Length: 342
Length: 261
Image (cartoon, rainbow over all chains, first blue to last red; front, side, top):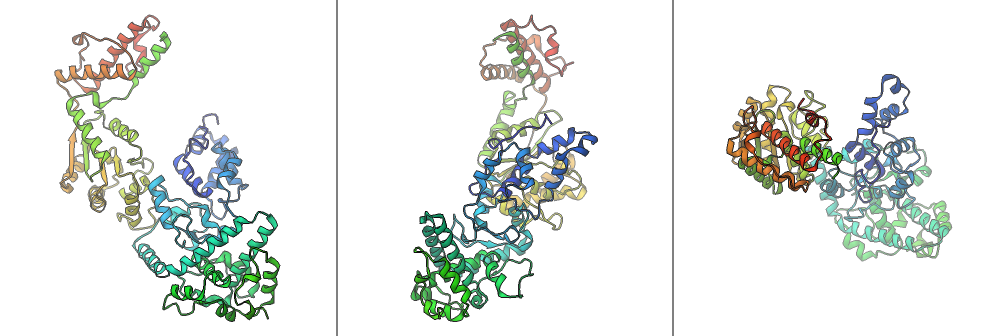
């Protein structure tokens, strides 16, 4: 084992700004596969049989189904840190998420193609960014565009970004279509982004942890309300609404769906949710909304009143909103609430 | 410098890489032309020919280490015979080939090539990437397609396979050129090499070794680049050790050059 070169964070490829741990792990292993391979080469059969090292190397090849972005105590991440002589504290300090509202690994699907292309120019690899896993960030932090959604089978792979970049002419055509459709909808998205930024700045202003948590829950509840089945008409022009995943809970009753949908929908759908939240909070007025709306987007509401009319009466929702109200964000701010609050 | 340090430096000089720029004017011109092509890639395809041991591999490795961000050496020594040329290209540029038809260039390889800063591909010994006869044509048609689609994509390759050289000229475009690296040198070039090499070594190691009497160290086996290089380096090292007074502490001078025995 003494022949294994010891690496540290200074000799390995530098993590790209905002890069997720799984993406960096993949790059490190591609660039410096030596520790495992060399060690395995110098071992005799007996040593190999009893080496935890050989087993863990075999496990590296089966990295699917584990959250290697954020679950830092996962054995594979510990093994990785050990092999490359990295401290777990350093890994946590660099790769921790910026928010607690994270999309589970098995529903991970969002990415920004522009960011990936820029990273190829910079570091020769498409990288996956950790901010794409945040529920309240359906827009790219750098380019401001709505995040694209990948196919469902990519969700848990460690080489997510590499797989995104494996395409043929059919997929090129698909990407062109997505870009075209999103471009048509740009004004509604711009309003959604404004709402997201405003919510972001309100949340960052709150210093008290409990109030912050309540305000966050208020936003999440609004997100859930705007994604309720009754409101799905608003998403008829969104290219991809939900991430394909296990349909076990769907159709049983609305309760699990109510809680799960923000996690299960694509970045494009969440971007539109923010537009609807803007209407509900009165941050987008009716005229603005009418100007932004596409002519053929028939079912998209342009006022809070029409939104509340469509949504059924659900006392639980009212209770939740009342429960999470704070002076920063509360039911008193909701426009046309009287249609709902009966 | 104490004797043991001097012996260490002597070893380094003897084992140092062959530096083509110390050789003839012709080598010097080639180096300059290659440097230009690497600094501003113009989509050239350059074939380097030469007999075994004439320094092509060293040259390509040197180009790679001097221009790490703009050049990429083709890897793929593990997968000989199983992959086709496009697979090797994908591997070099960190692209997944995917499950597509053989010999078809994936769309995303072109995208990655247009994005990356590595515009120069170095291929040392193209023969090893050839799995079968069909590949002989396929390699150069692929390179031609890539250089048509990516105007800056430059390839520097070497081969000693006659069939591949013929294919190179068959597929050649106006900006494709080849160069044969000469191994035999004339006596004048040998004297030039001596002065360049010794000056270069003095400069590299900040030494002031004076070397004279070239006739006495004329290589016996003819004026071959490798032989001349080795003989001149040995002479330089001998003078250097004598100057440092380390020759006495070295029991057997031949022991310095472990490859000579």
